[in-house]
Image 1 (cartoon, rainbow, N blue to C red):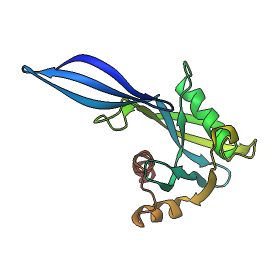
Image 2 (image 1 turned 30 degrees about the vertical axis):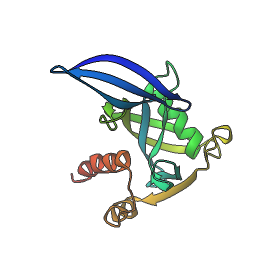
Image 3 (image 1 turned 45 degrees about the horizontal axis):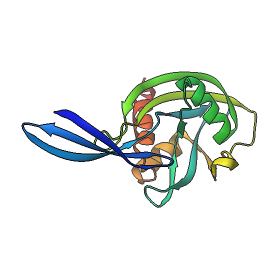
Amino acid sequence: MKITGTKTLFKKYYTLEEIEIEHEGKTFTRERLNKQSAVAGLVYNTEKDTFYFVEQFRPGVMDTLVEIVAGTLKDGENPIECMKREIEEEIGFKVDYIEPVVENYFMSPGYTNEKMSLFYCEVSEKISEGGGLEDENENIKVIEMTKLEMINKISEGYFKDSKTLLSIFTWLPTQLD
């Protein structure tokens, strides 16, 4: 397969491109959503023995979802620093410990180039109100739950977001020791 051309169809928050591809003498097009890379983290409070999630409106599903803390990298930003910034903005905590779990995996390679880096994070000190940034129109509700509540919510179908499920299912085996 050979990419023979790219055309921007739309550019605002995301960029939608049309890609022309040549393969075995045939030419066809596909669309690609061009998006900044992102970070996400399962956040655990070591003092309270609880996990934090955020509930917010997601236009892709036209509904609110409960997810782990996440956000988009700014140009040139280090993923760890981005994760720390997002934790403070969304839930109002300073990060005590951060560990990469999976770095630079594709979110949905069939239509977007977006990459995600997933982290496990520990917090204990509240340093701001959280709730997201007003100028980004984030209306984030912070949700706190125990380990047992989190595990029970999985079987109830409460979490519908792949990065959240991936983070929980990656964390669960560490609890079997």
